[in-house]
Image 1 (cartoon, each protein chain N blue to C red):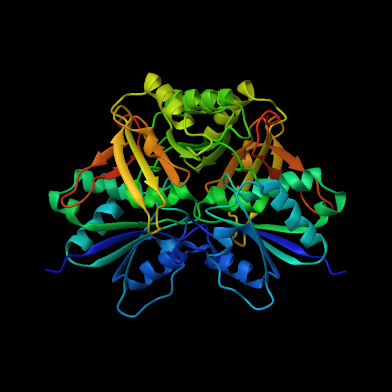
Image 2: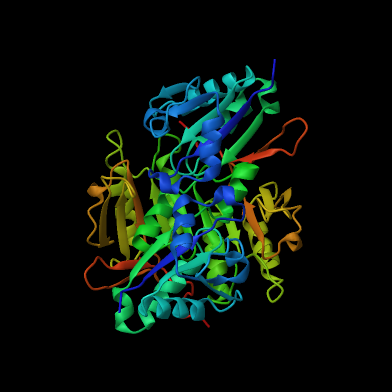
Length: 254
Length: 254
C-alpha cells in the first residue's frame, strides 16, 4: 500500500484573497478533503476528489478519520478556517496521533499556515497587534474556567493586548461577560476595545468601544474581541471610524 | 491632485507559497514600493514602478516617506516581512500619521495581513500554538527592559506558550540570555523550547530542546523562539525530529 499523506490546511478568515498559494495547492492536490462543512464549501469541486464534511464539534473524530484515510494511502487535506495552528485543527491532529496506533507517527503530516482571525481583524482596524499581545480562547469546553481567570489576570498584569477567540456561543453565552467583569477590575476603563465580527465576509461588523462602555453581548462565535494594552489608542480620521493601533514603543520609549 | 493611497503589505516569512493573493496584487498595482531592501528584492521588477529601498533601522522615517508619497498622489505599497500588523510596519505607519500633518489622516490606508514568523515556525514544528499563547518582542530599543521582565513574569504566571520576536541582534546579544534566566526561575526546566530560524528559507535551522538545556546563544535576529506552556510536549516519530504541540485542552480537560 502506498504511504498516504496528511496536510492540515489553513483557508484564512474567508475571502480567497487571504488564502495562501500553498493552501490552495494542498487542497487541490488532495484525494480527500476533511473538515467542517462551511470550510470545505469554500473550495471548488474537483472530479474524483472525495469531500468528507462534518459539523464543527467533533474535532478529534474528524482528526482520527483523516489519519485513517492517510494511513490507508490517501492524500488527505484537513481544511480549517484561519490558521490551523492557532486554536484549530493542527493540535487536534497531533492529539489524535499521540493517542492513536503507532503507525500514525510515521505518516507524512504537514501544516500549511494561514491568516488567523486576529490578523484579519487587526488589518481591518489599523495595527492593534503592533506590540506585545496574547491570544486566549474563552471556550471552557477543554479547560476549567479557573485557567481562563488565571490567564486573564496575567494578561492584565503584563499589560498585553488581548485577542479573544471563541468568545461566546449559544451554549456559552456568559463567559465573555465574566471575562470583561474580571478585566474591568484590573484595567483602565478607557482601554480601547474592538469587536470584529466575520472580518472579510459579507456579514462583517465592527464595533469600537472602551472597556467600561463595552457590551460583551455583541460577541458571537464569529467575533474576534480585542482589548488594548495601556498604550493602545484610537486615531481619529475624517469621514470614517477611527483607526486602532498599539505603538511599537512603550512608556514613551527611551 | 489625485488622492493617493497606501497599502501596508505583508509578504510572509520568505517563500512565495506563503504570500497571499491580496499582498501580491497590492504590490503589483503600486506605483511606488517602500521597504527594507531584502523585502523589496523579493518582488519582480515592473516597468515604471519606483522602488524605495532602505535599511531596517529607520522604520519611522520610512513610514513618513511612504505617507508623503501617498499624500502627493502616488499609489504606495509599504512592504514588510511576515504580517505587517505583528511587530512590523503597520504600527509605524499609524505612529507617523498620529504625529504628522492633519491631511495624512484622510489618506486611504489599508493593511494586507500576512503569515507571521511564529505561524511559519509553528507549522513547521507541529502545533505549538494550539492553545493560549503570547508574543513578546525582546527588543528594548523601544521599551524599557523592566517592561519585558514584567511581561515575561506574567506570561509564566499565566502559563502561556511564549513566542519571542527579535530575540537578539549584534547590538543586543544578551537579552535572550536574561529572558531565559528569568523564565528558568519561574517555569519547569523540562518545558519544551524551539529555536526556529529562517523558516521556509534556504538557511532554515531548527533546534529543539528544553528550557534547562537550551543555549539561548543560538538565537539571532532571524530566529523565532518558542517556549512551551505546562501542556506543550514533544511527540516522537520514527525517522524524524519529534513534533512539538500544545493540546487544545488544559489540565486533563473535563
